[in-house]
Image (tube, one colour):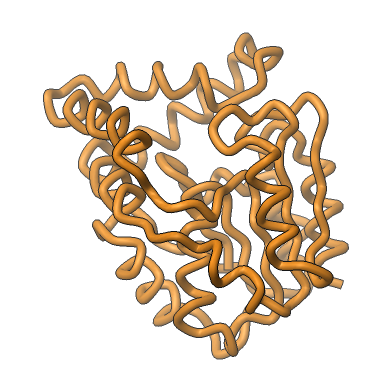
Amino acid sequence: MLVPGLNCTAALYAPQWPALASGRPILVAETSSDETIGAIAECLLAAAPERFALCGLSMGGYVAFEVMRRAPERVTRLALLDTSAKPATPETNQPREQMIALAEKGAFDNVTTLLWQKLVAPARLADEALRLLVRQMAEDVGAAGFVRQQRAIMGRVDSRPGLSAITVPSLVIVGAEDEITPPLEAKAIASGIGASARYLEIPGCGHLSTLEAPEIVTRALLDWLD
């Protein structure tokens, strides 16, 4: 089960799809129809098989943590990519409120342009193909879906207290140049989970590791699944 991040669709995992789908069914969680992480997690659990491997990037990681709280016995493996276990705070929510206001005023294009500046490593900002892919995902989510996702993110709880209860094989990946959820946060997740976690930091990579470093992420996910 793959869980996309904010303003993202299944295309976030397109580079990994052929390898991951070899010999196994792949499902992608719906993340833009509900306004709480709990509701998104419940929809995921309703759509998922009885037992499944779970992978989430950014907001997808917030959802994955919620799934682990609600139904840990159903998850066989956990992959957390470019995400954080920290809760929302007034300080982190303020820029999200500003983006919501822009989206609701009809300036969603401005939101996607602003987000692009932080989503990828500086060296990838001139990558037009990647920029167009990110913009297409945003258009597919739409302004209303984006607002729902932001409200869900703003209401997320602190996942740090539950990290030590995660005992399944876990993979924690982060881009070394991730400005949104930097390596320190990923290291804290891996440390909190403990012996069952593997930490992977990718040089020259920003927040969208599946798209910026597709080969590295694919190999790591295949090793995680074996």
